[in-house]
Length: 311
Length: 282
Image (cartoon, rainbow over all chains, first blue to last red; front, side, top):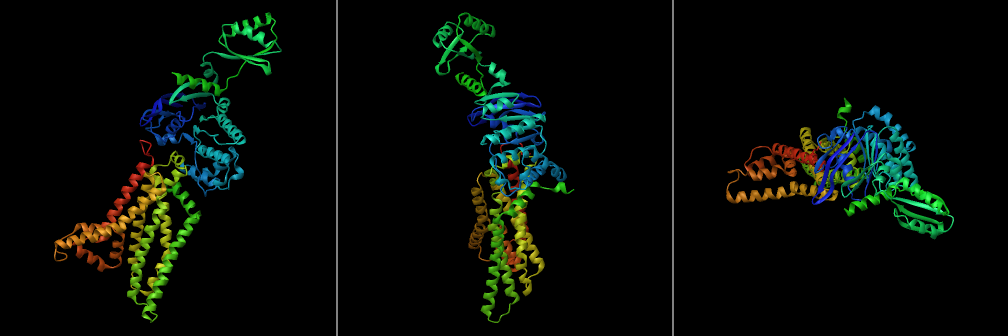
């Protein structure tokens, strides 16, 4: 569905995108993760036909962003990170204008607009002026606008940026709905946990290079292979600590005295972990729980980008 | 059939324009200036003669001055309506969204220009009843009035195209506006200065008027809206210019050619530069 080949964008001596390659199947929700200035918005701008790449090309449904921008625009719905609205247009006029801009007939627009407003929960705002809507409502309206021509691909640059928690939840629900409708969605966000639960695939971009791509679990596996394990004890913290220090597969031991917990990095396999647990029981240590610490996307991102910086 | 000619940008711009107080106040200002001028002119002329009647020659004079005044007003108002066409969209962060729709650059630019021109045409039409006062007193033919209005329209489209071009190639509306006013000062003022300068130089080299041809003097006069209006209102002005420059070709023909070229040039640049970040401007 989406094919990005050796996409490079340079601004003078600054390289915003460096030979980016990416391939996405239809119906996938792809989360683009990266620090500010990493190249997310540049990639999205190229895909939205707003920017020409210095070299390379990108294709959506086989249409090139360079050679067939007009045909490609029919396939995409784009929502930029920052956008404005027309001061003196009403909500339905706003959607009507964009519907007409995509060549949708007047009769069809009349049917479409109420449906879209219902999808983004703005039915009761249909005759309100756009500039009087709240930030969250404007974001939802912009999403409805991006959907007016029923695009196959949605490119959403920081759609939850600047929204309060309630508006963020509403936006997430709408995106889930769109996912169930089979849309291919490209979404960037600096609020990483949000992406983790919504996305099928995640790409981590740093300094214009795609440094990791896959589902959240596979990206986590790309980390050094160390697990962070937490054991909970009833007492004897020092004894347990001494026991753990003897194991060569264990490092970075942290004792959390007030919670009677010890956290450590473990390089061993699952079988090694079973052996460690058996050994602890045989040594009569008062361990009542052992669990692997969940790494969220933020940890993954920090670890990967740190690794990339060190290279 | 109607759908084929439907330009969404044109319709949207018209809606926004007619809803803004700025447009209403602009129209009011325009009509007020013409009203004040006509009322003042009538009062002064009848007061001076002391007879309370109005001669056809005076009516013609009012027509000529009104024509120049209206042209000046149109030149003054057009940049404010067109110089923000694209740059204001950029400033309001609505341009990127507009550029991702399937509308072509030509559709967007033409829609923007036509909406501004439509408003200016409305202004001219709104002023027509006042303008038509000259018919009450005679001295002016309807065909003269029609030709003047057609040249108003040409000038509005040309200045509008300059405004839209600057609005597309500059990032800020204020810069586009200054550049457009600069172009107007050139077309309306500097060309007149150059005309007189060229005529003076030409006369220094020739003792008798009309013995040689000064294409330069003719050129400066032919692109000056004021000169065009004078030659359109009074044929003696056209004869005088032909005598000074030695060129017999009526000014309106050169004006039509030059201003049509300005329109084509400016719109081409605007269309090409609208999607400046893309190699293709489709």
